[in-house]
Length: 405
Image 1: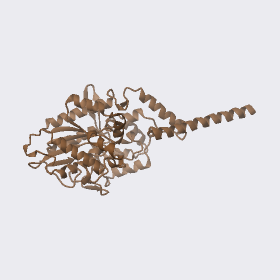
Image 2 (image 1 turned 45 degrees about the vertical axis):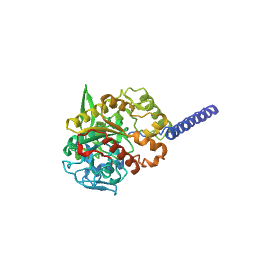
Image 3 (image 1 turned 180 degrees about the horizontal axis):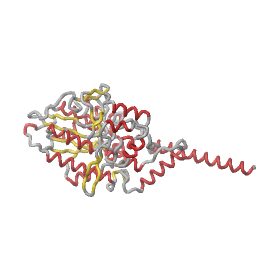
Image 4 (image 1 turned 30 degrees about the vertical axis):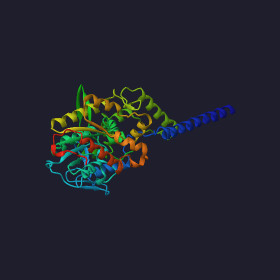
């Protein structure tokens, strides 16, 4: 009997040590590597379902459902005194004619939240600052939070081209490579209440194709609220979603530190040896599907702008993680993309060049808002740099000399 008690106590002690070691490991991963346990769910949270009801009921939300794009800015809306959208769906305090006025250089800006300029007011965005600094430069802000390059391209095709921009900024933030292989936003960021689905690109042989938005109508969203249809639809949404296919899911034993640590460790190990992983040595993996899709989509976007008689310019927006990495070892996650752009001869602007000197000399808070986007002063740096760049272009518009006054 004593032996049984001894071994039971020993086993319990060893088990507790394992759990304690796993708990310590989870803490270390979170504090040192900024890696947290964030499993995908097989069901929506109560908050996510409430967001779906807001979408279905078409409430006064800033982002509204769009059958093609996935979501878009709601026309004629003001969000918390921060963002304002005109009747044309453009982030602006005024309306725009379809044809630019004589003597005005019109720029169409397409991209994600860094193009949209999240977290600052309309007059503090880099797009508005460019126009304010030189009235002969007019920047139409078609950026939208959480967009992928595919969505930006589609918005240019369906809306932007009608405004006849002389120059088109193709905005790209380093994180956008992850969105290139995502279909349903909660699979990309499990803790987010942003609940939209979107189109994505794919390769069919050597040809780039588009996989349409799988939730084309509000009735499709209603199915996510149904007890019998929710699980089936969530699985269908994961069919072409990289994160659904490669990430770990929540389970009944997740309360145990050892289980959470094991899932994180297994995921990291599998990702380390995967040929399709998104990053390799902290830069884009050029062999991944995501990198191929981004480069192919960027080329298609760039060539279409040229065909329409406009000047395409790819604008690369570094985030705070990119800035820290560059300060540490002079590398960028998007270095392979820069190499690709140079090899193709594509016009591009790497805003690291403008932001990095200030990042070295000033605290992070001077350039980045709490949510990770540029501060008003950061937007001012971007505006000045892009105005300088416009002045270097041969735009064949003699009345627009000395753009940066």
